[in-house]
Every structure is written in structure tokens, then in C-alpha cells.
Length: 57
Image (cartoon, rainbow, N blue to C red; front, side, top):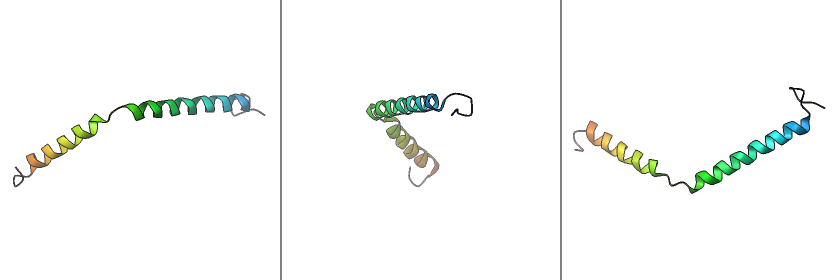
């Protein structure tokens, strides 16, 4: 049988497996990166609340 693009189904399965492998490697790398942006985002949120709420400043 062939897929919608005329390629054998086995080829489509290989492509899907390769893409899944790449996503898994990206997930593994992302898990090792420190999420400093969260701290920055929290700091920005606190600053904005203080700036926009005169009672808090």
C-alpha cells in the first residue's frame, strides 16, 4: 500500500519515527535548561502590580 503522497507506508512510518525521536531529544535537552524566564516574569509581574496599584507602592 502507499500513503497519500504515493510513498510506501513504511517510508511514512520511518519519517514519523524520526520526527518522534527528534521531539524526544528536544524534550530531553529542554529538561536540562534552567527556566530563568519564570523568575524574570514573576519579577516583572510584581513590578507591574506595584506600578499600577498606588496602595502597594
